[in-house]
Image 1 (cartoon, rainbow over the protein chains, first blue to last red):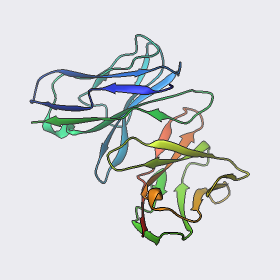
Image 2: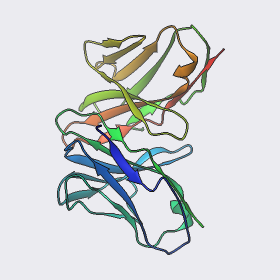
Image 3: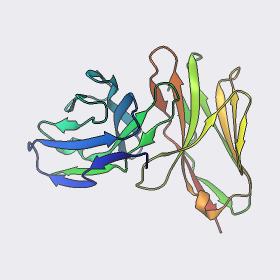
Image 4: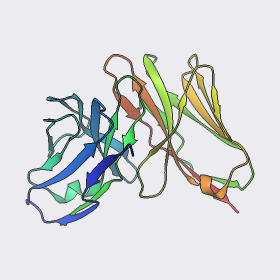
Length: 112
Length: 110
């Protein structure tokens, strides 16, 4: 089944403790992206990647890192999480030639 | 002006009615258009692509008006299960950036 898999689904952590949210897709998509979604603010792009070893900042990259060492994986790293990073996070992938995103099921992160 | 704008709603519509909502975009270089559906606390899912000639999928019809820079979504014979937030998505020509609207909330009332 074609899908984007994010883990974990839920995470509660403390301020300053490094964490990684994994994202993997099995559709051989070139484009992958991370979003956060907050009430009243909609989906905001954190980082995106057009292909392996190519990453770019989105609209709200501060406090986040990403890497794209393999085509299928695009982990999101929070080196020192803070409470303002409490949010619902989505990973998404797309074929550059067909458009249309497939989203992961989301990760609800709470930083206390 | 935001690049993609939608009326946030909510639209409260009785079951069986027809409902339509629009999305405007400001960048005339936008090249691809989509409607997504998002249920509460779930991931957005692609509902349909939007083509210049208009396209229909069952009870759903999407249209693009490039001259006035808006896309529309029409839902006929609405069902309770259509209750969701509908997101307008536009892809920008040149850098292929994908821009999401903030969504329109739809409540279908029994």
